[in-house]
Image (cartoon, rainbow over all chains, first blue to last red; front, side):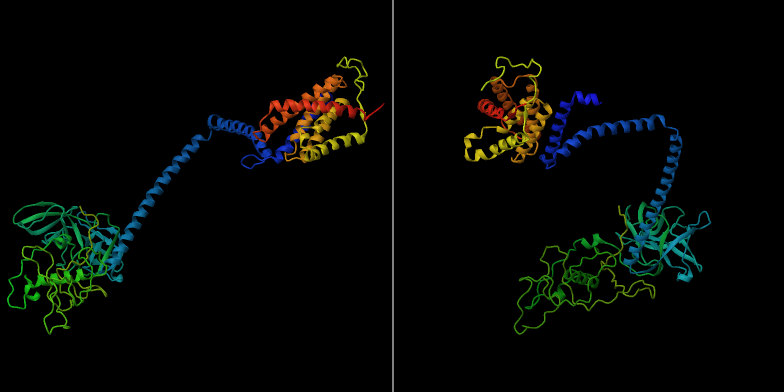
Length: 426
Length: 178
């Protein structure tokens, strides 16, 4: 080595000097990215070597793992298969839990918006009989459950409590042959009796042959049975047979769609109206008023036609229009219009509809409904002059005694108050 | 002014390749004076800016001392000193003059550099080499797109070679006699 250095001493010193000055240059110089050249050179010199070394290392290890060291592969495969099976079970369990949580949330929402007083219960068992459709729920007389109470879900009615034990209750499902409930058609208001058949479909009996019921119509509880309050969805018509003297109507219960795990027991039922949007949106033809009799012109009170129920209906409609409320569109629990509103001013005043008051009548209050223009001859319209009526009082109806929950709103017959809708309507 | 062996340029007789000796003050003072000249004189006489006196000094000492290591060291020191007084990064002139010192000493070992004509051509050659190599280093290491003016380099190289002959003759007077 020493002889080598002596032999090439000059060139070695030259290279050392050049190298030293190159290092000196590299320390000072920066490239375009403001990085010192010594860093650039170092990285450029080291990186390829490091890349080659890493490639060789990775290749060697990969080769060893992929082709030589395979003794644990079989065990690992078995372990992974077991892991997959366990994860599948866990996934199914979590899906079930999520489904339960969704049902619980739906129940909570329904409880919050329904005016009826309800109590949530879980189905803990089913009846022993092969043909009987009964289930047991985990709420009994201790919790306030009594025999004859209705059992519902947000999707529809489920059944009735036929026995109440201290810690559990027995519920007769609507599919049981012994079950019966009063129902009413949403579209045509046809009333009938729902009966179970022991099959998934129920039968609606006592619908006259001449009544119109079509497949797809919805039936709601009518409240006539004094068990289920009016307005709860029952099911959708799946088949209609025109038999004498009554139609044979088969209904698929909507309350059983999502299975039976969580239900609501109606402790205090409150009647509700049926959702009837189509009837509310249909224009009503009103015949033109009779010719004017006398100089004072037609009186709005005398210009209205129809029965007292029609005038009351129009009164409600005007009240709703005055407050920007459209009947049949709000959800149950939403704020209803103020039916006590004493309408002193016309709803839609117009110069033609607001004639100048007579002499001596200035400053006198205008009677309610005086500014509403009667419809022109031949002009069909839905507006109808409203007769002045006293503030609305709770309407009578088939309502069990003491069924009204505190704070529940008044319901008038024929009003288009919001009502629960079935979750899926085809 | 007599040049020994002006009719031959190769060193053939043993003993002719003995290195010249200079006093320490000469080895220190002459390069320093050359650098000072390079720095200050062009400030007052711009037409003398073409002179590369430090290069000529390095070439001379590398010739006469006939040691490649000494020539390299002289070139490196003078180059770094020149770098220190210029705006170029340290090492630019150092690298180039180190190479010049090395090759000049290599030439001085084999040729009779006391020959005036040879001195002229060598001075001319090393000036061009110096300029060209500086241009290469500037482009390669600094990324500077500086042009290489061949014609001007040749002309200035000739002028430096002429001045170098005179300078070398003056420096010959500073040799120590054995």
